[in-house]
Image (cartoon, rainbow, N blue to C red; front, side, top):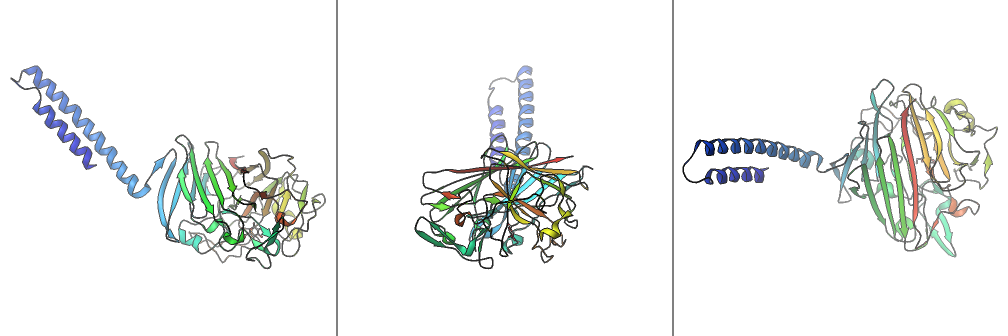
Amino acid sequence: MWSSKIIVINLILIINNTSPGVETEAKKNMKKSTLFSIAIIAAILITSCNNQTITTTEKMETKAGITKAAWGTTDGKEVFLYTLTNAKGVQVKISNYGATVTSWVSPDKNNKPSGIVLGFDNLSGYLAKPPYFGAVVGRYGNRIAKGKFKIDTAQYTLATNNKTNALHGGLKGFDKQVWEATPASDSTASLLLSYVSKDGEEGYPGNLKVTVLYTLTDDNELKIEYNATTDKATVLNLTNHSYFNLTGDVSNSILDHTLMIDADNYTPVDTTLIPTGEIKSVKGTPFDFTKAKKIGQEIAAAGGYDHNFVLNKKDSSLQKIVELKDSISGRMLEVFTTQPGVQFYTGNFLDGTISTSDGKKINQHAAMCLETQHFPDSPNQPKFPTTLLLPGQQFHSITVYKLSLK
Ligand code: BGC
């Protein structure tokens, strides 16, 4: 700001010192109007510089639809909170801690804005290890039986952090890492996050370079694009672990939401939630969501939903797989993915011990996840689509969560 003041003062001095000789009326008028113009330019410069000061202290950086705020430190690294805003004023907040979606605020049918995903407004909420609220989960989303798998003849052993199994990438998976983040576009609200997972991290082989690109479009879509490469054969299953409650209030359960999943089959599980290997028809079971029904309708018979649905889509093109509706808010969420499966989880293990930042208890079924991914335990299930990633291959997948009013 001071530098622009100095420029303006210098300009005034220069103008005063030019036009030597006798001061004619015309010269005086010219001087007056030049000084007047300079005053206006000065005002504009100083105001815009004042705005910049606000930007640097509070928001630090702006790019198309993105602001950045300091959010604390962990592991000696700086954590930031990025706010993506689209042309409709809808906002999604993302932290580089765990590449986590911390909030998604949109208007309901009465034009009242509220948040539709579980999250905290401070870093400490996440450092207390909530069950993966909004995070990117990796290197392997969901379970690997007994924390063991083989690639060719090499045997790998992971920490067993979920009873006898490995869950969501281990003790310190991608959800607990500080990612690099940078606004990615001049024209859209896009944030690119990257992370390098070292060979042997959490027991997984290969140096893995991962990027996640979040884009909030003006159609109220949150598009998530994953890319990864490795320098050694490894297994990979990336997903986003957002918990949705379309009512905008976690005091309401999600049991009255209606859900359609375009899946004729699912993968039944054993008592430790490891797939039995069978690909079973949903027909005549509580897992049939091929026609929209209330989530609560048969949840008791299902013992709570925490299952992988085998999507009907036949290839890896981006297709619509889910429609979720809530009549209280009038909101609808559609999910599109390139992935072969979706883990539908109804927050069965949420039990009121965690509260939102505004003090509301997060009870069982307060929110639900639609984790687009490969099937759990694929590294040990030869009949499931492979999750192997080899050197020279490029892992790429896209998931879109699209919000609208019905
Ligand atoms: C799993 C659940 C688990 C939850 C939180 C889901 O993806 O399927 O079993 O409790 O994540 O960790």
